[in-house]
Length: 515
Ligand SMILES: *Cc1c(COP(=O)(O)O)cnc(C)c1O
Image (cartoon, rainbow, N blue to C red; front, side, top):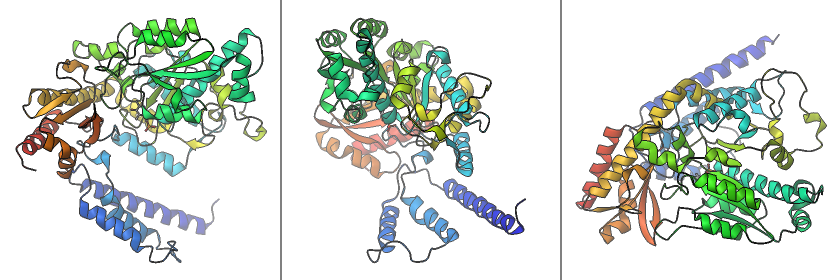
């Protein structure tokens, strides 16, 4: 039994946390809906940060105490954050928002400091919840039975999942080449150099079309290098589309091992590398030449969860056949609207995953061999980059349980509809140009709209001017060497009519010379 002193401390903690949380909710409730912080709030925050550091020693000699600290966070720091979850018109990057059930679940994770590390079914449900959440997600994305993806895990995001995809790809390719020589050399045991040498591989390449920048980072981390990533675009007009003939020519090179990285949702244009029937072709090429197919579907793979109605057939064709991939990346903190940071990795070969990510020789971390009900669950420490890690699965589980297939569909449809209405407005406007091509069908639009102002002067400052209004926030990018603006719709908060009206208003008034 806890001592009376302990109970007092617990009661004080409880009171502090309830008050801090209700003050946070008040702060959030009084947010004015702006899509970015006021410049004064930023300036105030920066000066407060430097004011706490009058000397080089920035650590306060005695602490401010938790109440004063929370007041500081809520009144000085929070107003200077971009708080993308608070506005339905934050269209920068692809950040997603956060569904309230996900936020509540994430607070449960914090309250319990829940870890997921070793599958210990006699002691914790956490690994079973994670596995259930992953199975629900596989069902949402219509990727076949969960048993099709036995090497599955929650990651910190798409970058981590891409690292896992390339790491598994290189291991599997070497294993299959060395398998023929019945050698027991692996990258996991012997390293990349020795394994490539034994397998007669002199080069590794990653074949893609407009692969996300994190793919190059992943290539560096797993020892292949940035230059291993090769762009094989169909044409200059459609650089996001993968040229299957060029892929075949690359696969046929002697002594070269290849990972094919499919961009299922390219982050700049929002377009897709493949069309219907491409995936089966790619699969047979990969099988013929012993290549690995990794799909980077960070946000785009969620097109598979849209209704199969006429208006989404184009997108369904873009993401058809993804179940034929060897591994898949998806993000949780983007379209799924769970909090940062959460990603998903799915792999069809569990033994390759555990070969690469085995945390060897740690007897104290051995899984219990209990006969728990349900599927075989691999200990998370042997299927991912981290050993101990946050219980990120709980918000994902909560969202999928709370929304179900229908709720997810409705949310995703809302995002696509707004993006298409914005694309239509831009395409039909005198002052703006819809990129990459005004001839494209609106149905090729998923959640990203790329555009620029026709007036070169306005285009030069367009992104800055839009963001200064604080009514919406867009990302600056470039298309064919010219500046461009990009809207990425990814929050559950989107309201098509209301938000479209604000976007039109801002763009028209900027074009008319207002601000
Ligand atoms: C966002 C994104 C990534 C990187 O995702 P993080 O979650 O930020 O690590 C990778 N690939 C694609 C296609 C993306 O859109």
